[in-house]
Length: 239
Ligand code: TMP
Image (cartoon, rainbow, N blue to C red; front, side, top):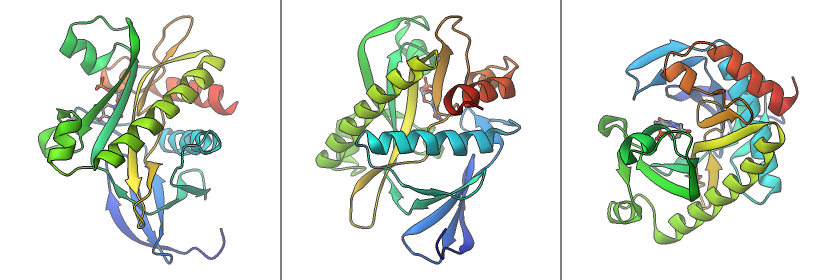
């Protein structure tokens, strides 16, 4: 890491901390083992999660960069820390669904596991006080959360992420049911993929057994949470 010095903590979220550096365009993210669900109501620890999420995110972001999706990744610094471009996060949770599960199944009365005829792109307004409400493009535009051009770019990148990841995970025996990603804007206004891609933010089901290999094991008190994260780490990174 050429000449980057870790500075003061700028922010602490539910799963990560963010630190300033001596370069105003770069920050360091530090992944914690803390886990929450239901907007922070349920709290716990998933031992080793921070390391797995850091390493898996960076692995996926490198692949996605090569597939034409720009990301905030600069350099992995340690097991839990990564140097990234400083962005302002677009306050949208961008969700893609390939198979019915979770809040979609509840809202629509469609059983979990039912394959969707076409992938769904869905937005939530990223606002903890409101519990991240479901919104559509018109809400985002009307509230000034993003411009039309930004929404078009986000949709294009989100579907590119989905195409790449569905194939990648199929190759390691995992069905990508759905996932959540976030985008940021650099100081010059460029939209890039930020945040993380991990078992915290994706639903991964074993292709053969349909066993859940993601944070639903924590959300739903299913047990075997750490083993599921380790299994995903092994399948993705081979260790
Ligand atoms: P949902 O079915 O609960 O709406 O979740 C859709 C996807 O988004 C799923 O892969 C889990 C992920 N997700 C997050 O990353 N953060 C969240 O706060 C929530 C609610 C879901």
